[in-house]
Length: 297
Image (cartoon, rainbow, N blue to C red; front, side, top):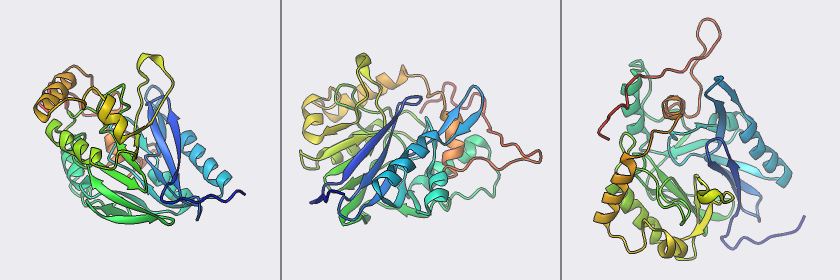
């Protein structure tokens, strides 16, 4: 096996999931062969109700092939467009799960929307670790820190690992712009401030986004840099906060809700656990009718 020296530069492997246009990551230290998994996807077909672990198993195959040891399974936020595979991967690897500590606010909000039982825990105990803004950890020998990045959701965080930042749904590729901020608890003003914090990182910092929607039919992409975003992203270059908020809110009013938002959040506020089986042995999702219809969020 060829020896590689990290110098604070992790090896980043991105895995595109085409059904939800999501990107999953395995981020490793080439010196120690230790890694973290970020934003893994549990496959779900809304037409049949079928779940599968194909996308997550691709990550496990990569980990085995590269001889890596999984240290943590990280979610950047409770996703509104896919199920998290964090719990499945925890069961397979024994690695702890983690998310930002503000997930508790998201749990409280969606608990009400789903009218969940009063004993549903809203303390984040579904994860092994809850990260606060400024918390640090290591991926092998590579230092990492957590940046609170709200706006898209109340709980979004960015993981800065060496020279790479995993910016979830704040920034997309420079040819697509920025993420929506109209979900329950979202805020365009908060999103602007989060983006400014990310763009205060060194210009050469590699930025890895959570989705790519392939404008113009191009191939999927998920890596950019701080300098590239500043220069080419039309929602950033030459834009001030007032104009950004106006642009973002106007754009969001025209967007349909993600097709899996009501399916996904009830799984993802459980840390990626599916609902418990009922007395017939089957699991059921609960879809609140008209919960998001005409909502002023």
